[in-house]
Image 1: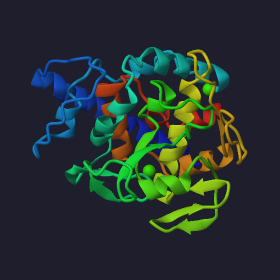
Image 2: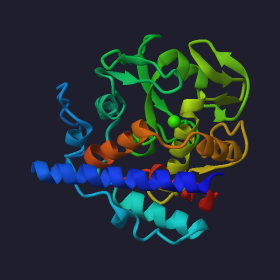
Image 3: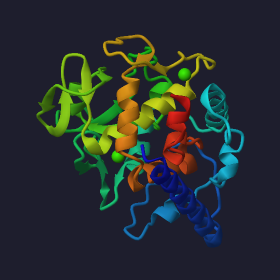
Image 4: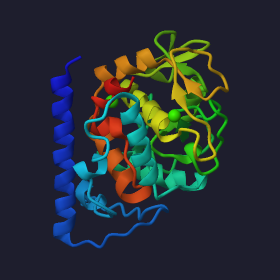
Amino acid sequence: MDNTRVTRRGRIALTVAAGTVLVAVAAQIPATATAGPADHTRSGATTVAQRSSVSVGAYDDSYYEDAVGKTGQALKESLHRIISSTQTGKLAYDQVWDALKDTDEDPENSANVMLLYSGSSRSENSNGGDPDDWNREHVWAKSHGDFGTATGPGTDIHHLRPADVTVNSARGNKDFDKGGWEVGEAPGNYTDDDSFEPRDADKGDVARMILYMAVRYDGDDGFPDLEPNDSVGNSSRPRIGRISVLEQWHREDPPDAFEQRRNQVIFDKYQHNRNPFIDHPVWVDEIW
Ligand SMILES: [Ca+2]
Ligand SMILES: [Ca+2]
């Protein structure tokens, strides 16, 4: 892989995030630390920087200070401590709707959300259970570990995304792997009896969400120890595959501005923890 390029992207992300904090400080907007749904003011003039101003702390190298220089299991354990101890915001499942309207807002239409897998833009108010509504896709399928929708992994918006109801149903609780037939309502996505392959633009996002969950949930908080493996057909085991394919997808589809903004909004306004693999893509290869 091209480590140089990925590292540079990470540095750019750091720079952008630091600039965002500076804007917030300059504007002297008071910081709050609420874990609940944020104010959804939909002013067309609202910028990403202003949205990110509801901050409980600057994102900079200090967030990852304990992890820097570590590799392998020591790095994974350090990141687990960091992203668990800083998660001071935990949502109830019914709060996830409003949070996703914010984290996944269409950058070109603030009344819409962007849908995972299909890549389409849909009214943020078209959420529900009808076939063309969007609903809350658990990228780490909640049956893999059977953690349900109690506050915890089932409500952790780092891996929850708006998805078309029909497309979400096609994914079901399948593991991730290459191949199958094309999903009718979501061109570029493929599925067969035991696996799902997202479209190219979502492949890396999916990988980083799965790996976030593996690090965040280690069995020490009343929920199962989630880990990736290289299998499909994991069913109810707290495992999701295939790690070799997810690593490849992570390299092919590095974090983009939408994914980075999403991470920042979750940090600033909802959970106050971060996805390390969006911030430091090279850490994937150093752990798996
Ligand atoms: Ca992507
Ligand atoms: Ca784990």
